[in-house]
Length: 356
Image (cartoon, rainbow, N blue to C red; front, side, top):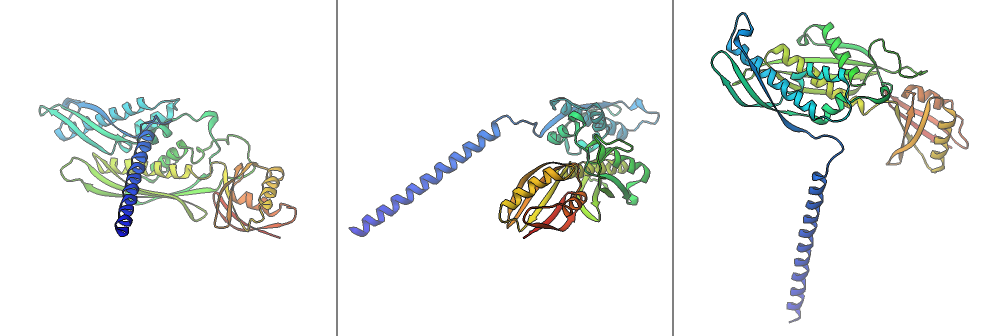
């Protein structure tokens, strides 16, 4: 009897645990559903439709394949224009124009919903997957001119498959400056600065992959690597598709540059990450923050960004590059302790060690 009572009690606890587990899972699903359903402050990715048509009579030497390619290109551009209309908030007209000129790069993922033709004229409707979040960031108007770019554009190298080197250099400069990653050629800084932005070298490798079976498109893959002082700070490799090999390469270049610009945007931008080894006692960090704010020219703000494995990371905002901040810290006088610069990782990381 006692053993049966124990068994019944155990079974009851197991049922309760399963019930609690199901209840917790239901609660979590509800919370996730609410979070997803709640309106977000920015737009979300979604398929966008567009239609386009073309007539064989538009060219002196008409061909069905060329007519179809023009109709498809116009349908994709129409979808991009529809996506731009969905993007809210103030926008930069020059950025919108640049996006439309790079329609192939923004509309590479699409499917044809319908196609009608009489052997001469073609009408196509497509559904395009467009990254609306990135599109919003690309065309959003930067109030007050934005922050000073963290890099100055350095050397630009490209493989033979990328085509004309001069044209590619202009494209790299235009795209990265449009994203705010580098200063436009010949542009004056937004505000006076005594420090020079580190040079950002860009290498572009392009590979035409040939025609895609059962489609009228060519494929390409483009890889972009950005380095500063010999260290890779951002890289991206993207596939692209277009009616011709040259257009596919151009679309891939723009797409890879956009990804690299996004990665660069999370670095630099007037902020240096100062990693502090041997930070204890904590009063040292407070004194270091005060000394930098009061004594280092170009430092506007210092705040704790992260603490992990005995290292404190401070975020230093202002007009100092990592190299300039390291030089200033080497001359800084601190009460009760000293600091040693361990290493500098341009463009935005400095590691120091505090000593008694």
